[in-house]
Length: 355
Image (cartoon, rainbow, N blue to C red; front, side, top):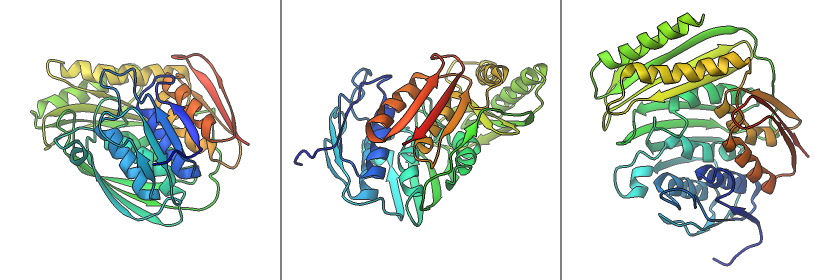
């Protein structure tokens, strides 16, 4: 493919992970600007495109008929040039198929790449995504359904996710089906600076192909620990079948003006009580700051904030390097004024003004 003028992105910028690639793809599809990304995941132990990253590339290319160069496993350079606006429709993408083997590559990350372009296209889209539904270092399907989508709906984004089958790390083998109702016009800005009182705490402890006493122990431990902090939680144990064993606990808080979510996964040799403690610790650390927006949601709302029809502002319980890296990519594609008040790992204020 002949090199076309466009946006150049250093894939090792900031935290240097796959988010640089996914945000670049999303913004390239949305704006129609070609992008060249170099040094993709250069600092990672397994640099370059891994199965879930390559799936995201192929998925993004499919919805805008992009011309692509460098789309292969292990590639550290990618050129991506959209040939049309995003086209609504029915699409299926399978991370395991791209990998050529079983893979727990996260379907949530593929969803994040496609969501905004299809949500801002006129028409309805239906996605079938196969791979890891609940894996570390990626938003779980539970988090997307219970936190991200309800908060994004306030800005005018409309989607539903149906969990067809569970896919825990490392086996994967899960499936989700997504319905996205497209729209035209700019998104509504959002202000999340005051969370209000707690209205509800809920969640579930889930295991795949493991004994039923494990999720029960997780939810009992979490319920008791949260109760000691003054939070009454409605928690349910669940046993599911999947391609392999897995365990996790998913906790959510509904405040008057915001939602937040927290996840912890089990692994061989890690007691169920410690899994529950990890999720509770994150929830309580967030709760004690008084901030409405959890660290993951702050990062995920940046792109829609940059596309809104006016200034947006949020207060988060912790600024992350992920968020700061996302801002670098956003500024390369869009004329925005963005400020971050606060330090990494501490509460902070994020303001985004589209210009």
